[in-house]
Image (cartoon, rainbow, N blue to C red; front, side, top):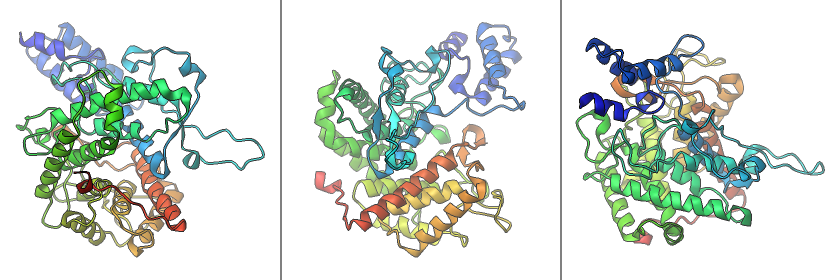
Length: 455
């Protein structure tokens, strides 16, 4: 029976959670028990051999394609909704399946708008145009069946399009937020919009069911608390709150497009209240929040309060709760923890070219802090913000955008870096700065509908 359960949990790729370490642990134990020739063990071996990179190394996970795509779409949309471009190949295809059902992965397609020769060329950031195929790909990454590994209900997204992905409470809000950023006004996208709204309904219901009794959101399954990564996380909870709040005003439209049981606005608000109580309870004495899945190797406790605080501030800003005590304390923490060079985080392990000294801030953490502060109400002209933006732009111009810091935290205290984190995170920060500059030049005062006003 045990081997049968193990086999039933194994994805088509052979890799448990698409992770080399976890799959290796399984294979070592099977081999030690004399079961190395069983199909489950041979598929583990196949996955490990397939995952080996050209330089002889192995990644912790095969890829983070879904996660990076969702984050990229949200970063691109900092200055306004994303426009969809017609993709003739995608429009002639009935459906787009995730990578596990295709010969090769679909890539994020971000394209500038084609302009007549008489018009000035526009950058990708200013045009904010993406391929409709990207949206179809993201929708195809949603899990529509009960998951064999965790037993999770349909509706969530995992971190990759591969068969070993598991739906979780960070990738699901990221996908929901990305879908909320798209401009659907062109008639040709009505069918895709309905498909997206149906996916949103399932995703919101999945998030609501996942919430723990303590009010926070765990990573994979409700009620798991034996291991450190099973508990609720402040970064996950903040992400879930942003997704719920973003779709709450459009709930009637979401329900109309879905055949599932209608979602209740009262239930969503009650869930959000519990989430806010959880965040208030988990705030540290210095005003920071500690994330679950991110760390800093140069810190004594290997935690990352810059990442956690920046991400939670995004939620307070989105919910219009910047005047509350928790948001003020968080803002003060970030301002007081800014490094002398103008950035945040980093340490002796971060060495950028063109930078002097024994240590440096990191692009990833500085970007997270800047975006959190700007979305958390800090003015663009503030000296701390300007100092940070100067450091960030100079570091990027010095050719350091491809230098990644290992801020990703994994099972068994394994660390990883993601090559696109510096690009995606800095795009989000600089996009937030450009948006703030644009609003200031137009003398526009943003009126954010506060969560309290929606009660």
